[in-house]
Length: 140
Image (cartoon, rainbow, N blue to C red):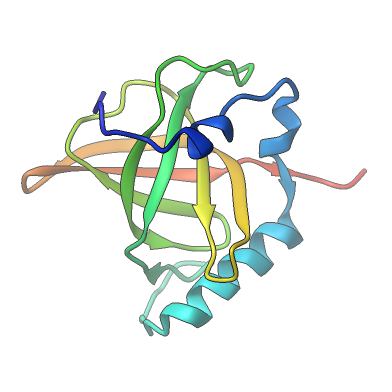
């Protein structure tokens, strides 16, 4: 894992006692992502069910296990694309864990902390492309 320097305030975001802080209703994720997309104004043509949008912003991530327990220190990655159901990330190192806790910052100063299940990690030029799906909380 990368050992980039992380602001202590950002590191605090990854100290939690309740893993539910990272699981949100689909509506909240959708609204947050739509706001990011609107601010980026990057139109894309897509054949997928949920349209992906090119987006290049830094995201703080932390590898976690299935129970949301930290496995390593937080580090920064760069987004490649985003949709309301998942995200593509770029990093200089491969990811070996199945889950990542993400902190995505919006322009309004609001943050979305969310869990992602890693579905692929493959080389891309001198980087690794990490693709994942957001873990959603469904209403009963």
